[in-house]
Amino acid sequence: MLPALLGILISALVASVLVVGLRAPRTRKLAMIGLLPAGCGFGAFAWSAFAPDAAPGLRMGAGLAAIAAGIAHAVCFSILPLPAKRVWMRLILIPIGAWCGTFASLWFLWHQAGDSVRAPLVVLGAATILSWLTVPFFARNRGYVESGTRKIPSVRFPCPRCGTRVDWGQGIAACTDCGLFLHIYWPADEIQKRDVFVTGDHEPASVRFACPQCRVKSDWPRGDRSCTHCGLKVSLHWNTHTGPIPPAP
Ligand SMILES: [Zn+2]
Ligand SMILES: [Zn+2]
Image: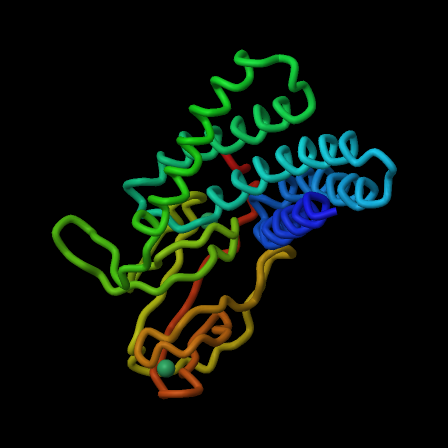
């Protein structure tokens, strides 16, 4: 009963990560695919709790949950913020976790394979754990971005186009992954009263981030607005692109 409960908990945790990925256009499809094994794994664990012989259900549940966890890892590493110079790391970190999930799944479902599955699983597992331990360092919010030797104050929020979390430097900044140009400035000298903007179908009309001055999180609509807490004037604009959204690497 206890392993089944633990499995249900892990499946639910993986599913909740995938639900976050649904919100970002670039990981939406991947997250949808991942929800299928997550849901089936949840079901297999639940079934094993009541079946006379729990072992097959547990093995099936663990195999499915491992695939879903590998996909959840890929979703996380596709949208977590990385400095522009380190974006290439996604190309290594994403496959490591995805393959780790695949081999873990093989190990649960096809245990008699022995060392041919266990050896790569141990290596990939160690690399995946290392990637999670180091990610708080690489993805930390320093409050500025580096441009040559200059440190430009930045705010962090998901790219309105692809959904990747980006530290946007003050002034004109480009998304690290899709290249969307965004103009953000504070304190804005004057507030323009032009509030009519055309937004694309999949682009939000506002983004959520912490005010650069008082650090209170709120929704900032596209255009010129003042912080509702400290009154800081922020100017925020981006262009609506009509091109396709880049897929997760
Ligand atoms: Zn983007
Ligand atoms: Zn404020």
